[in-house]
Image (cartoon, rainbow, N blue to C red; front, top):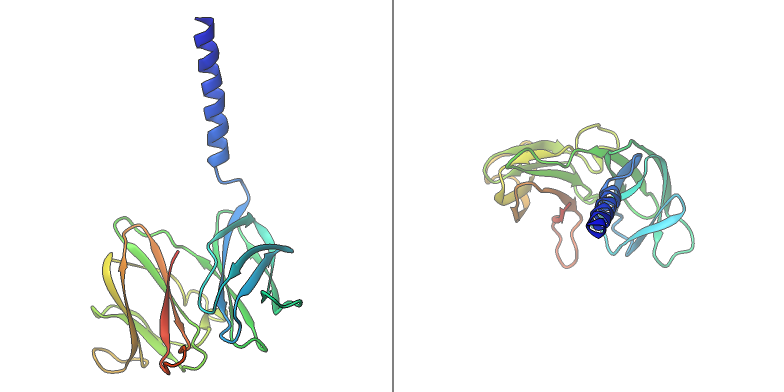
Length: 225
């Protein structure tokens, strides 16, 4: 009987320790970095001086990385370079989700931060769009079913326009995203499309990016968050 009580007590203690380990520590923020520099190959990312990710190519991103909330200094550079390409300090609140975009050419990198809300409504998927095609002027974004996401977006506009890259709840399933000439609808003005199957309960980012040779048309890179 004494042995049974001892095992029971040990199980309760181990269960408590396991639960504590699985909890998100107080003061934790989540930050992802998007590589929007078309003339840079792999991008190395540091948070507060420590390497946290390498993003292998243009128009891809890191995952949301957990880090201590508050002021975070983010440094990016080419993975084989000895000096930083860009350094920016952001403020990330506890339990917040943040995206930091480094965009434009390697000689003129611009950094921007968005505070994300990537959790979909019940039974929905959630999407947002970043316009990082610096070879393209303004563009509108819509779904092929006629749902408008934005009538006109400028390159890297999330840098100066709050909320422009906010997430939108949509029905899951096969979804076709369209980039189009601003303020056009229907079959007129379509620049490029991307069809993806979206799952309920998940969020996704469409990055409208420069063409990759031999193509001369901007396209989408699709990221499941």
